[in-house]
Every structure is written in C-alpha cells, then in structure tokens.
Image (cartoon, rainbow, N blue to C red; front, side, top):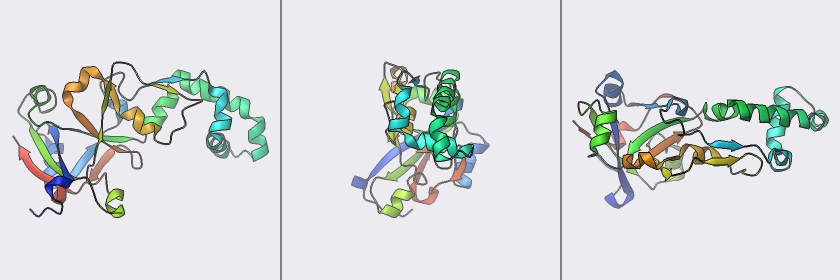
Length: 222
C-alpha cells in the first residue's frame, strides 16, 4: 500500500466493530456508517440543556433565524417583524418539548473512533465480546484545501471533551457557528476510558457513505 503522507503528518485511529455484514462492507466496499446521535445510548450524549431564559435576544443576535422562519411560511420582511413575538413563543415551545434539540441533530452523522486499539472494555462493548474486529486508520492531518473538503471521506476526527456536567446552551446568547460541533463533542466523564474522537458530518447527515479506504485503511485487528 502506498502512503502519501509521512509519519509525522498522520494519526492512527481505531474503529471497533462486531464481525457482521456492515463491518465486512467497510472492507469489501469501502463504506462507513455515519450514525445518528439521536440513537446514542447515553441520555446526555448530544443532548445539552437548552436555556431559553434569554430568548428575547434572538431577533437581535440571530436575525437569520427569524428570516428563515418567515421564509418557510412565506412572510414578507414587514410581516416577520409583526410576527416576532409569535415566532419566539413557538421557538420556546419547541425548546421545551425537545423538538428543537432533535431537529438540530437530525442532519448530523457521526463516526466514533478511538485512540486506543487495545482497550479491553471497548473490545467487550463494541466488538462483540472480543469476537469482532478493529480497523486501524492512518489519517493525514495536513493537506491542501481540496483535502480539507474531503475530511469526512478521510475520517479526520475531532477530539471528544469529557465533562462532569451536562452541557448547557443559552439559546439567546450563544451564536457560535460551530455550536453543533460543540454539542456533539461533549460526553460524560464516565465514558473517558473510550478515548473517543468523532468524525462529524452535518452536510449529508446519518447514512452509509464511501470513505477513502485505499488511502487510510492500514490494518485489521482480530
């Protein structure tokens, strides 16, 4: 196998899998499942507390949300201003009943990787009680702008942060464009042993997609 990048410019990450049809397709067809975070088994994983106490700040800090909501139902700019109060009331209701959080994650797909291939609990939990496999990926960490656009195809992951507190998102104040990434990259300290990193796709969402198997798949551990 020909590798394009020197050792100093790559990281090694590992995917634990049971030995089933899906796992075999990662080898034979070069496809990888991007899972929906709505299906994760940790009740706090990707489920921060959304604080709506500063919701009145949204029209000033996030006019794009007001515009998008108005566009969905065909409101003119003037009508959007008139309907601002109703919009905030609907938004608060969506936050309180959980629809806001679920919609935020519905178009996110995640591949979980580990920094450690020799983790006994991981072999037990994710590799069918040590009867599965672990895929080793040699992932480049530098490249051209074109390579950056293919980051998900190269399974370039982001580190997971482990916290003793449930993440809190203030809807009226926090306007960071990367807020989705922050939501999906924080887990409880109880999971720290996994040494997890995540490939996050919020363009295509959950699904099974091809990846650069011939460029990054390094070995299979059984």
